[in-house]
Length: 190
Ligand code: GLN
Picture (cartoon, rainbow, N blue to C red):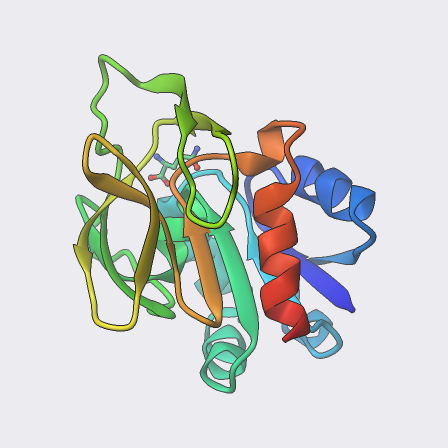
């Protein structure tokens, strides 16, 4: 099982560490050919407008759309969630997304005053709470059919999934809690 980490922009290091700690092999992806031998992909946090632009200029956008269309699993955190969403609200007018999960995501949705915060989350399928680390985070405003909401903050969905895609508005890779990444590996293994 080899997990690709999209490494065009943003913080891939913490994802690599947490995935290694639960036994997954990871490889950084910057070029289309590197996509060929990965079983799944993680898109990290960062800046979705920049990441979207780099996806196009690197030539990765279309091959990635193809892999996702043929069923490759992907996980996206924060900017990664925005990249995988079907609709981006408050994005740049020309901002493209991969539309792998039918959700409408608003960028920087928690506002500037509460730019970054931490709060315990109840996540379906996990016992106890999960430490939610939010950094200029989006939240989900539209949830399409076939999408499950696994966690909310003040009724706003912050973790959504299908059988193929897992997205979080928060950063599980910046905690010691491996359970969201384990959830993703279980999806990949199925
Ligand atoms: N606000 C960023 C964006 O719109 C996401 C922030 C993050 O990934 N921590 O892309």
